[in-house]
Image (cartoon, rainbow, N blue to C red; front, top):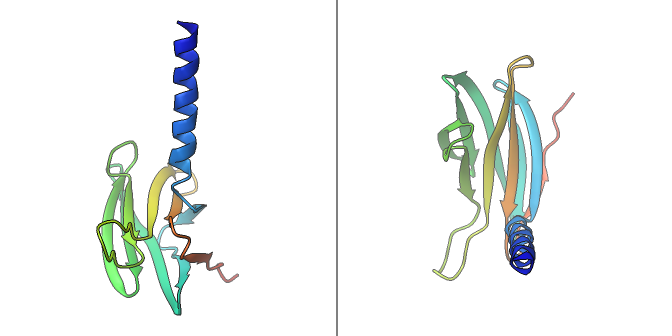
Length: 139
């Protein structure tokens, strides 16, 4: 029985390591209402901008506006549900065997005292084609 438990624990730890290796980069961000968060996405000879902001938190739902390469989107995110994140593909998927790089924005927490939403932004890029650069806010 002890051997089985050791094997199970080893398998679980290995699985967590493999799962976390899916993402090349991760950013933790805390933003207030209507504060825009921007990233430059660079690959080949392209430089594109990804940005998002939240505009409303009501009934435990956070309304997000986002754009990538001038394509607009809107998402409604909730904590502790399956609808906690949204995905933005950064390049076209050319074949079934190729998984296009993408950004995953995950809603982590809402701070009522500071009226700020906390996010994690993950870059999935298995072929290491993308350079992601967070644009600093001007003071």
